[in-house]
Length: 362
Image (tube, rainbow, N blue to C red):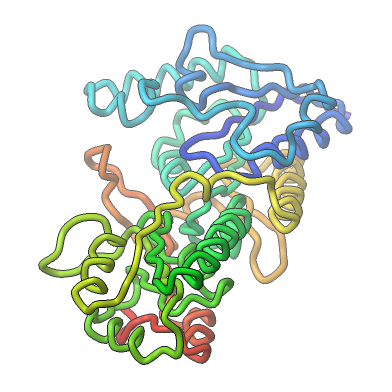
């Protein structure tokens, strides 16, 4: 059996399920008698000299933390040195070379990078950083905005967290005869709001992929047979001629129409919570697929779940498949994004349930 040295790194925003996939990868490496190290604080830790690493061979420690939220490797802090800060300082090329040197100094045969669509887009665009080793990426994000994969680590747990939050507010709403406007995360993608809204039977779900009319929303609420309920609002929606947080904009419209309401912002609770079973299974599938990719000498690939099948796709295919959007923090860099498609079955289900979702799918 060939002995390999494998590194694991988590980047970008955190979500539940990261520790599970780290534990599953580590377990697989130990069974293969491969050396396994974790790189701490994402690119900031890799940029450090020497790189900040941790021995992941203590399975008791990993097992005890495998279902908790966040990342035991950490993802960096607000003052971290990363692609964004390096770009702002005009030192992106030097930063990239430093990362490449750090990886070479660590003597890694392969790096498993667990990241969101921004991190994976950067991995594709700056693949020279990883030219001296195998790079295998695993998609994680509570936004479900990564092309070519049906699921991402952290999404199902975020839906569960948001659903539980909304269920508790629904009880309060009923007691006080009022409506709650809940603003969800999700960045530019409405998948989180759509899934959680259907799960709790919201009266309205507003997402950026579907055009809506505030007057029609008000009419829908007034026609309902209740004087309380939930309106799920994605953080990326906008209303022409209005400014402020999306939930506040909707709340003002309801108040103007004499509909009692309150706004609610679950914020980072959506990133928290013990990892649900479906995310644990997904983490196991992605870990197994990543380790097999290393055994097969694959590089510059991403693990995906497509129609029930775990496999890898090239990072170039991932990048080409999505809708390209300018990175707001790095000039000249594009990220590849996935959105709720017009034929998404949940849009029709929501409509059939009598949920207001808007008038025109973009």
